[in-house]
Image (cartoon, rainbow, N blue to C red; front, side, top):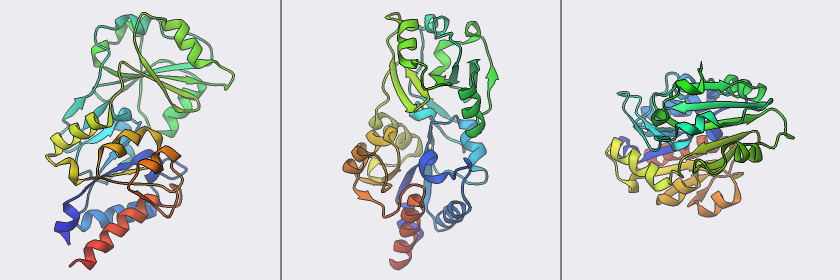
Length: 275
């Protein structure tokens, strides 16, 4: 039974499949994760959060492979502290001097050392930091070393704030960036798109597993390319349509109803029956 479970590494959407409304692991999720681990199952996670925030949330839950953190811009191995950044803003110091300086817009940067630096606080940014259990440091743009930055996050307090146009106007053509919304009030800027294949290959190399051994368990759009990059995948019943079309399996339950629990418990039961 342990051998059959141990042959697969589950890469799970932490933010959308494992957390309750309060931003913590629910008790049923903790119980199933413990059962899965005790039976020899291997788990790691994908998260928009920083390494410190992910560790705070997981608590005693141990990961068997590097986690994809900060939206997949870094693979972080909690077992030994090793990390592999997948992008940086090297040679782009000018960016940090021209980020939007507008009331109601917060600015934070996530660093390769796992920290979050706040350049300008806003109500929305403060709310996200609190909800996501994210430790942070206040900083000035002049103190930021661009080669150590993974991504920039902009937060808008009000729906009426034209965040994208403000960012485009402030930055202009001086720096080539990719902008993506990860929440209605959050815009993420990165110097390039991090492909699912690149994320997957980094985790597989660090964990010394083959891509054919990975099961991606997803619930949100940012994991689409990861789902497309693997042979084995499952998504929540209420996942975005594009994600459901790409997945090999769709759960019977939605994300809040226990999609991750369904898949992990089913794997344990299948392993037990094979004994």
